[in-house]
Image 1 (tube, rainbow, N blue to C red):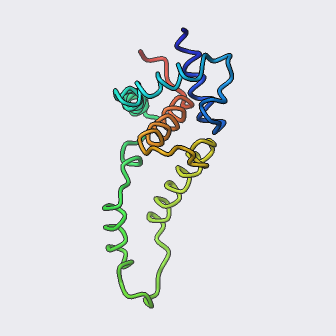
Image 2 (cartoon, rainbow, N blue to C red):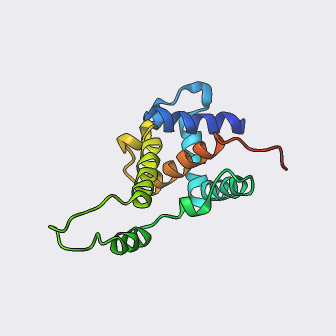
Image 3 (cartoon, one colour):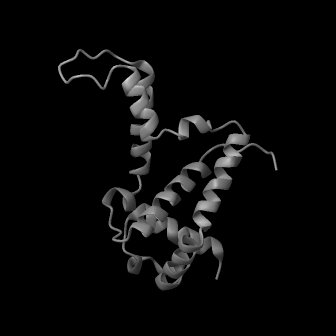
Length: 150
């Protein structure tokens, strides 16, 4: 069974949002692809591929690690430093760096939700949904312009 057909089948499921059983036969039997997907999900293959792609993007200067490492702690610290933790009636000013971070996060949610499987959240298991989100990130990384470096 060709690996590329299996991957294309998995990405078809991700993009279409269809049930596994509705996978077109041209990709392979749905059960075979689903079993392979579960194997790769469980053994960490998707996370390893994503980590390698992100490393390559950073090496090529196409991804800034600091931009991807926004977490709730840094957002809270920025908010507290700008006076956002004060009383509800306190006047609020426009904080350009904070707005830029918010804009980045909203754009990330936007491109993650472009794929139907994610925006409909049809997966019942958190592990499957997490693997699908990882595949969305892989898909996004693959759209970057890699240099000719080996």
